[in-house]
Image (tube, rainbow, N blue to C red; front, top):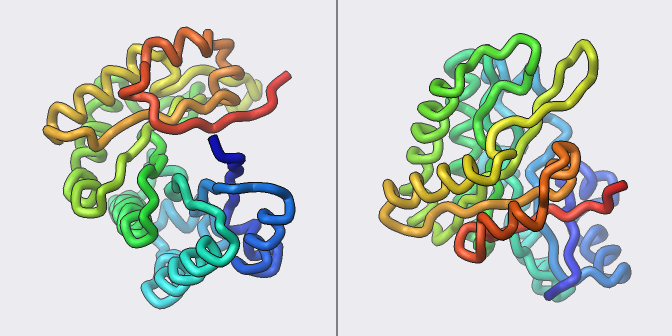
Length: 241
């Protein structure tokens, strides 16, 4: 197992660019990374309105991919997984806003194909507000199957596995945290198995976020056991107290 970490694009810019970041990671002893599409110019209000991110404009986007590929080879640091922009969906956003987010997901999958990254984590679609939810559970299921099925062609074309992740939501008034989509191990298995049946291929897996699970008081060994080797393809591991 390689010593890995996650690096956000926003932090790469703060560290002086891709080459400088990989040099620092190499010096720190990291052998592999998860690259996360978290960028300074993507914010909630812009996404709701359907405002395009400069990061995803072709010239910048593919230049960034080329630089990552060069740095990975230069420093011997593997790109083992990718985290798509988040959120994947905004309740209350314009139709154009959520369509734009879906396009970002497809472009992120193409990015993984270009760099040979085998896994991409794409958050399930859900309403993050516990106090005033706009989606019923039935709405949530329909929304997610429609969304993930729309990615199947891109996943197959780029030989990438899409990993769902266990999520949480918040009562924004009390600041209390509650379980959300895929925080239940059986629900997680339901989505993965159902999507793979539709895809007629192993296009979908799961990324278990240990920090998210700990917030929910989940039985993490049991979660791992239920998912099993076939479904569990990626991890987000945190030190938790």
